[in-house]
Length: 113
Image 1: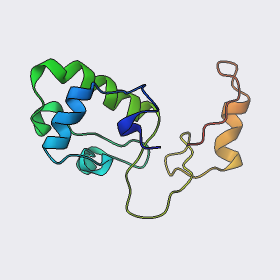
Image 2 (image 1 turned 135 degrees about the horizontal axis):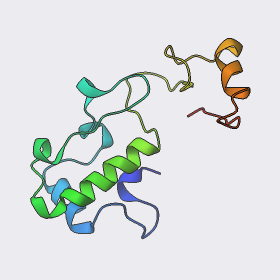
Image 3 (image 1 turned 120 degrees about the horizontal axis):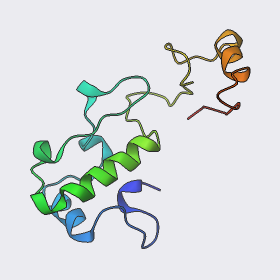
């Protein structure tokens, strides 16, 4: 389900902000993506200033885009792919995983998204 509309009645954005965006013909996540500031690991999102969102909705927008960032939502042209966060190239290798497994500071974690 698209996070834009939330799940059931649990909306991430206030309904009046969703209506405002809809009136501005902004209805898809790709319309709020900011490809100039995105990379292989992180999708950047357009700011309230870029979208012309009124001041009273700034905290809601920031919370929403932070939730998208934390969930690792990325808008790409092409097939989805697995990216591993502990290698600059994004591909898993045993050599890259070894220091993480045996690190005393951090327990092993599955880091795919």
